[in-house]
Amino acid sequence: LSTPFDDKFHIVAHDQGARVVWHSIAVGSVAERLLSFASLSIPHADVFSDSIYGDNTDPDEKQAAQYFRQLILPNSTTGGPADNNEIWNSVCLPTDYDTKENCQKGLWWYNGAIDAGACALPPMEWGTAWEDGGLADFVGIPYDTVEEYTTYPTDGVPQTAKVGNVTEFPVLYACGGKDKPDLCEETFNTQSAAYITDYSYLKVDYCGHKVLECTQDSDTKQFIDAIIVNIESAY
Image 1 (cartoon, rainbow, N blue to C red):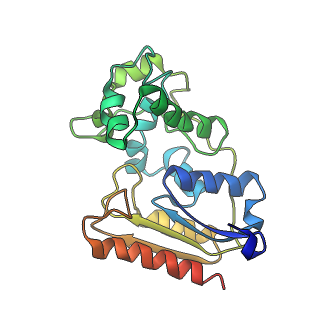
Image 2 (cartoon, rainbow, N blue to C red):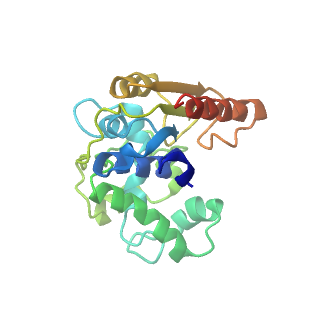
């Protein structure tokens, strides 16, 4: 697909796909080949990691990301010591995985991202995420069980593969105001802008995590239009 564009290409990526792109920019040569990048739901990777680990965390995002702790438990859907079928029911089935084994492969992405230094891991911290109606409560493995069986430090893990400044291509960060796992905070916008030379931002207040499947078609169209503008700005 990149051949007609002198071996360069545009990337539009969401959630974990966007995190993979940010990591590729940090550790590889992909920055030299990108014409543009639309990062859906995920701010600059350094901004996100700093929001959940370190001296300048965002308390709300640090709580929202507590579910990382559940998904990275050993064999969390395939008979590990903490597997109580909750992740299968709350995460795997709603995302159309057909077997626990296939879902487990998807969840190992979190372990890989943390182990590679691409993404920080927040400290274990009791709070609203674990209480009734919180995101960790929804995922379903209790705090005490996670604390007992985690193989990661309870005080968190830093991001070590930093992206730093991005100057080579335009970047769009677009997010939904009702996103629960990846919060759409104004500070994430301003902090991302400080890293990126050619930067644009879109927040749609009444859309959630799946920004291309908003309840209102007009909201989804805002994201599509912003992606097109970002691509066109590369020329």
